[in-house]
Structure formats: structure tokens, C-alpha cells
Amino acid sequence: MKLKEVENLNCSCCGSSDQNRQWWGRDRGFGICKKCVPFLRDGFIKAYQEEGLKQFELAHGIEGIHFNIRELT
Picture 1 (cartoon, one colour):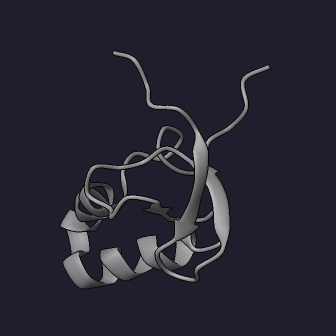
Picture 2 (cartoon, helix red, strand yellow; picture 1 turned 45 degrees about the horizontal axis):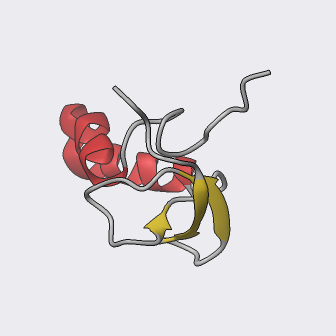
């Protein structure tokens, strides 16, 4: 599976820019930034309880692939 290119995406939560990969479930040009991940993840867990992490991934993608991408050296 070939990954999409990393690009500057606007955070759908705070509007800042971050280096991410586009997730099909987000409008083109939008993702989530590193500082908003904990806030959004906690909100999904509160709202959906044990299904929270699954719902979070459906909405925002997979950590390390679509957001919070770590550079490989």
C-alpha cells in the first residue's frame, strides 16, 4: 500500500497548520494538529465510551500515518 504524500493541512479544530496526510473522512486540506489530538481524542472517548477510539479513528485517521507523523531517519 502506497501512502499519500505528507502535506500542510489546516487543523479542523483550531485552524493551525501541521504536516499530515489527508484522511478520506476530512474535507480536502484539513486534518488535525498535534496539540489538538489529546483534546479531540478525550472528547470522543467521553462521548462514545468504549467505542471512542474507534470513532476517533473513523473521523480523523490513524495516528502516525495521518496525524502525529514521526520523521523516519
